[in-house]
Image 1: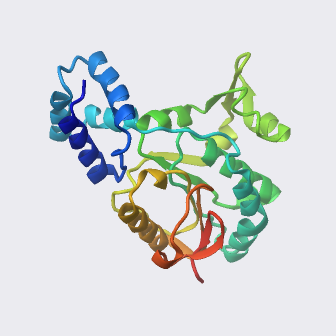
Image 2 (image 1 turned 135 degrees about the horizontal axis):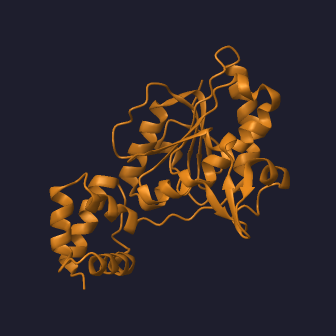
Length: 269
């Protein structure tokens, strides 16, 4: 059983290292970590956390974030974002980059891959025969190595891909079992998956035209959230777009981005 002091210790560690606020998740933390401790032979949570803190880049630290983060996503989630991307954002971005033909898109909380693969399919659809002339690779990052492994494999159940248009299912997925489909190489090559902690300094050389940062800030306290938005702003192209989750909101007085419509923001030109 995790004690109150052990729970507070975990909350402080996760908040300071990953920006995630678990202070109201006592039951979730207890349930998930207790199972992990038993399976891995730890006598106590304190023993485990001592190992985590002495090896912050070790397996135990990676396991901690894999165990405690909840990753729920699906293809075409908040589909209005993909409509807006196709109808408004991509016409602007392709006109802006007509010479370089370089579109930079970041799925910053990519989870098990449904979002970045959907972005890549929208790009294929929008550019059509011109696609091969453009660099449209989607950068997809997540803090959890567990979900990234799933994403890189690109294997989904029939029910997972159900929301996709039939022609996309036919073109981009290969049936490998009665209920199983695998992402085809053509689509897989369009997404670059990387493990990344959003609290770390951004290592990017170039700025992004489009950032999807959806349904991750619900785990952050306000100071963490607005510091992250400031970093995002600094790494966006003039005129670039930021998409957040439809249940999330930002105080317009605390950000430099322009409000376009609920969950869509833009950097000034």
